Image 1 (cartoon, chains in turn cyan, red, brown, yellow):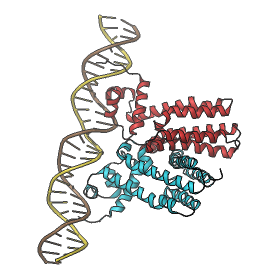
Image 2: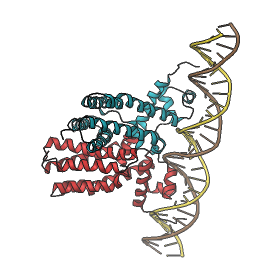
Image 3: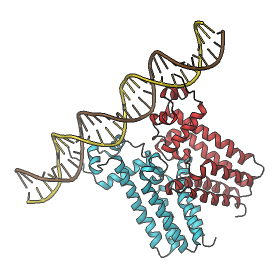
Image 4: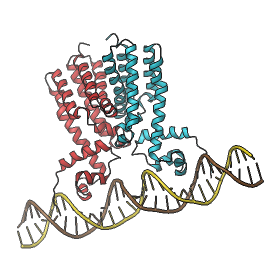
Length: 189
Length: 189
DNA sequence: GAGCCATTGTACCAATCGGTAAAGAGTTTA
DNA sequence: TAAACTCTTTACCGATTGGTACAATGGCTC
């Protein structure tokens, strides 16, 4: 039987897309087996606690990606403006120019929120903190930085929902570029 | 048997809160019967097409509320600044200072999106259009108005998700007041 | 090449899913 | 008062849910 041996990280990547598209409650095991080609046996071998553990793995994977590709750069880059540019371009490509939703936001807006509250909170808190610190380094006042960071992190989520709702991915890019301009002009404004 | 006779609009109001909190897929009929106290018979008497019709009724109800309490005022008010103030204060109280999610956004971010795409699109399109027109009347250039309207409508959705994610309803008010200031200063800026 | 063990497919489970059927209770109309 | 109508309760349906058990299958090591 044991024909195609799956890699755990490939499975996690597939799971991410499924959860993103159907939400947590909308993702059934039969849908997962269908989309991944893996039977329940394989799935429960990788994730003994079932669906909940699958979602946890996906969220941890996403969290790790953002920490290494976005947050760390915000913190470690010498030039804060460069770091901000990198963040916005990284975000734009991660979310496929508005064609992809944020799973953190998807789950935050769903009934499954309570189950993953810690993961979601950590993600948004981390982003807000690191972005605010970068804005301070870029010359913005402390108070304005935290407020602006909050507006940007939230604004990205809203732009994704808006793009999906209007069936117009371009709306994401338009909002994103406004947020970007605001960050790069923050010290002056 | 027929003891407690329910009013349809009361049922719709209860359904709205249930869908808001659990999402479309997370809301089961047994949960509905539990929270509303109505049996399946009553539910199917009001909504013969079942769960989908219940959600449609709720979305139509929400759409109507926003059209009469927010969009119409944006369009009909003589003083555009006053209309903008009314919109922001209306939104703040509707979403209970960030403690309540937007069902349109909740469903847009879920797997049930396709089923209700028309309703969701109409809601966001209407809001964006009427807000942009008001901003023009308030003296902002046409191009800036549409872009700002998009940013605000999306920003509200994002602020709701952020508030829920951070477990800090106050984040909603903070972002909202920034968006408000941007609208009221738009003509100058 | 024998054995081992991670990995897999399949069959199965109780519980719950959304939805239907039908008959009873309460109210209105004639 | 008797039929007609509205609304509700209860029991039930097949399908699907998330999850378990287990035997079979390979690639691997010794």
